[in-house]
Image (cartoon, rainbow over all chains, first blue to last red; front, side):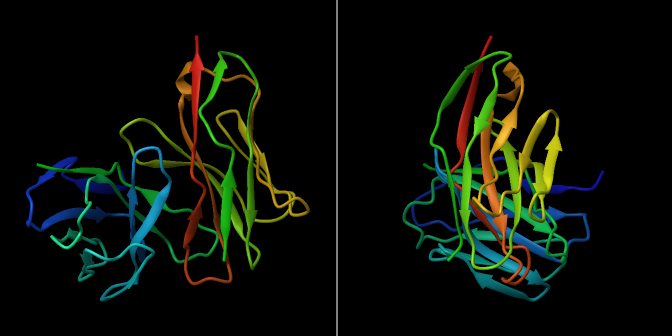
Length: 113
Length: 114
């Protein structure tokens, strides 16, 4: 079955450490997205990419970085500059049609040790 | 800019009760509208969508009608079950913007008691 795979499901970060969250999709979608969700809150866009080797900042990009070297993969690095990284991170993808919905992975929960 | 406003939760209902979750939007263009559902510890799943005025999206007993005149897309279900307990997100995708960027509402938690 086609879908989006996020790993790991749970991740712990030490102070001053960078961590990378994986997102892989086999839906052949061009666009991919990263969102942050805090408890009881909606989704906020971190970064998005509409094509390989290109990506744009979302609303809360500070302290995060991404790469898009392959169509299937869109990893997110949470850097030490992100002072409050504890959150639930969701990856999504969508085809290029403007009326198409985004498809989501099951998320990665990041916590600070 | 675009925005989506949902009724605040939690919404607590008894099993078999009627559900309405209100959603209104502001958009500069002519958006597509979506409802997503999130079960505990999981990602979002598309529940239904509508792409033009007066369209009705429906799935699993849930319905929502795209009302351009009131800029609304309220979610309804005639008889809720305990398994419907989840967080529901209303979202829009504005065709005037590049790609399929979504603007989300803040989410509404539904709790259904047996």
